[in-house]
Amino acid sequence: MNWTAIVVVGIFGVMWVGIVIYADQGSPLWMRIVQVIFGLFLLAWSVRKAVTLLGKA
Image 1 (cartoon, helix red, strand yellow):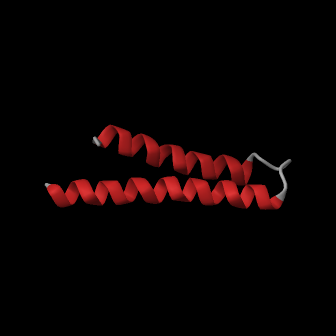
Image 2 (spheres, helix red, strand yellow):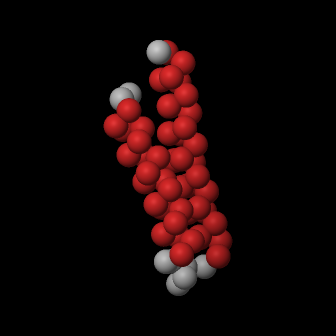
């Protein structure tokens, strides 16, 4: 895994959460909650991989 992939996934996760919270007003609440959890999962994955890469250095 390289830094570019980790950064792209992290940025995508943040953007996903932002879009779901601010722009997706037509979806039911439960669906927005699931989508926010997915975005946070992507963000947590990227942080975990970044820590792993820093540990190897």
